[in-house]
Image 1 (tube, rainbow, N blue to C red):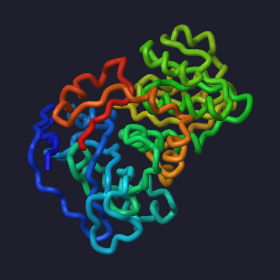
Image 2 (image 1 turned 180 degrees about the horizontal axis):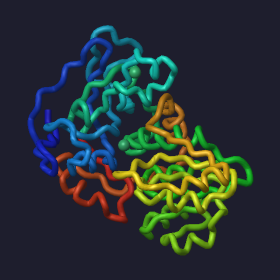
Image 3 (image 1 turned 180 degrees about the vertical axis):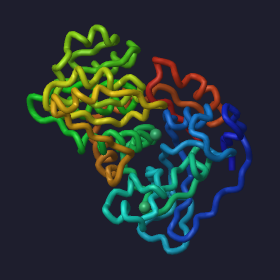
Image 4 (image 1 turned 120 degrees about the vertical axis):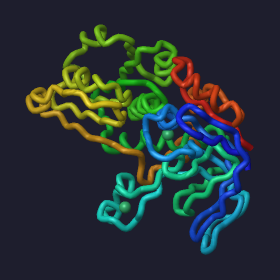
Length: 328
Ligand SMILES: [Zn+2]
Ligand SMILES: [Zn+2]
């Protein structure tokens, strides 16, 4: 099969690799479209360390090509979205129902070969049927939308909340949309103008490009979604939060920075982390099918597999939101 192998940091080669064999309880998926994510970019740059060579990529929609021993409830040709973090299912964290933070989880595209290839294997329990009528490109958004849904369920705005979404990459824009759909008044912050334009199309009432402008709203926001992963994000959003505000952290900073801890106590802030997803894929697929997410505003470019290096080179472009690779 054709695969984009990340041989070492910043070096991708299109190689012919053997088609993987599905083991007990696994399915073989023929990848149709795959999304490019910040994690892939970090892996490409060598920031995540770990194993090389590896086929990166974890956001995919495809069709079932074959079934491993013992697999039921799936048939060949069926379209599926892959949930790409495979928990051990045995440890205390898994047994408490929090498989998403299982310390032993296997991550597709990082720990094992991922979806920038014609075929990939996944456990049957981690593939979700894609509803009829939902396009491949929209279905390829299931994984990042599930990330946003997971955090949104931990920190859902109620009537009267003033929401700030800090950072408007794909996940941030999903938070904008989810908060707008819940009826909240939404402000979005991002230094790049094109992404704020999308935030407004998704229903944000106010957008800001500079932190100095946002200073005027200090103490105003009752719910804040931190999606940027910027090292100084907390130093900004803690002073901007209203007394009793709820803050949801989903961006992963490259390095940690000091936080204004006294303000957390004085304002009785509630700070919640959110990591990937547990069982949000079904809800994400249903939302995408309803069309309310406006997935068409998220998809910027679609490249063939051998253009993956070019696609990654453009990752920082402010005009890009979600780029996809079309494989078959
Ligand atoms: Zn991702
Ligand atoms: Zn576990």
